[in-house]
Length: 41
Image (cartoon, rainbow, N blue to C red; front, side, top):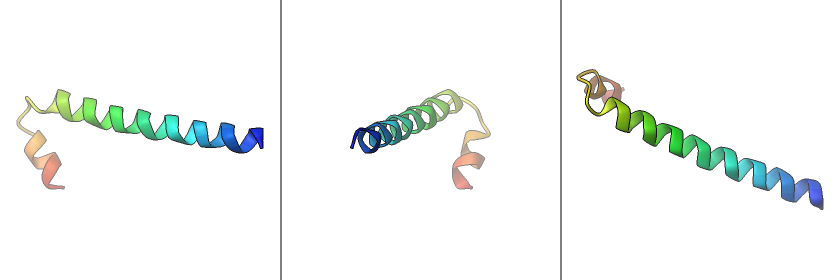
C-alpha cells in the first residue's frame, strides 16, 4: 500500500513539475519573436 501511495505522489509531483516547466518556458519565450512560430506548431 505504501508503494502505491509513493508512486501516486511521485506521479503528481512530476506532473506539477512539468506544468511549471512549460509555464516557465512560455513566460521566458513570450518576449521573443520565434514564440509565435513555436505556438503555431
